[in-house]
Image (tube, rainbow, N blue to C red; front, side):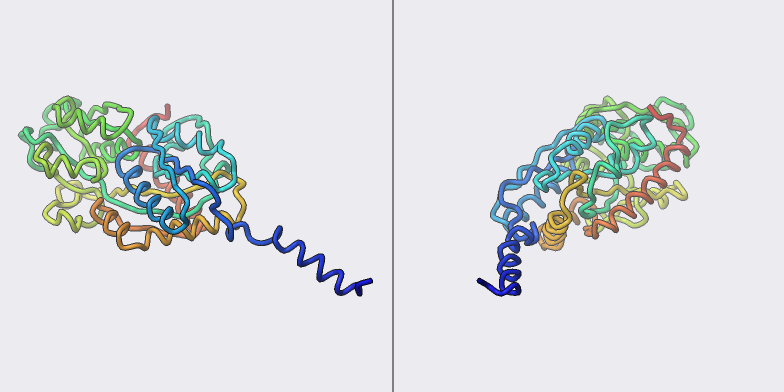
Length: 319
């Protein structure tokens, strides 16, 4: 017979493969990356997916499920199996603003998700049709004061809506919002002259500005874009106190094992540090924002409170 100590050692050795961290073998199959929106979130998600696939040898399949300010995608991802093979890419809409814009949501932004990492923070851009007589935020403000409610703005997400509502509030004007399923759809109607204004992510608007179809007026952050240094901030353009950015984050369904959460955080933050991804985010008017899961949780909680103040200040009634 084996001595008791040798029996214990043998039993422990047999158990080690079962107890080994799940991240050692993860991922062992394709990852499904669900994205809340088209535009910047989808474009950045595809860059991250490509980098993660290169690092792991496993496909990362990106699926955008736009609509309802990201609610459709968030509720879908929240119900997915908590095995790490579903990653949700959301925004300040899904995990901060929607909590004040809607009386009831089909998901809970805290209890239904396991935070993975922040992804980026970025500026929005205010733009009008290139044929518009408006050439500055100051001119737009004066026009809106002369004809309250006549100027309308398109939006396909809560951050884009809030950006215009905040402008309206701080400038003391009244604008009319026109909802769309996605921001690119709203941008198409801006080009077509069916809406007058849009304050949206630069990935959506910049190509249309560069092609001469739209005219950029300002950016929403506290500093100018490196890619468009001639564009003033909204505050510089005559709206004192205006400062608003959007952000992206990554989550897994609640209950995803901690070692798998750690592995996904490792893969995503490594992708955010790659030169290719950093350059892409910079061109999109943003900055990489890698975090720990704990840091993302603290950040989204603070952002939820901030967006509650913005929504209340703009007089938006929850739907």
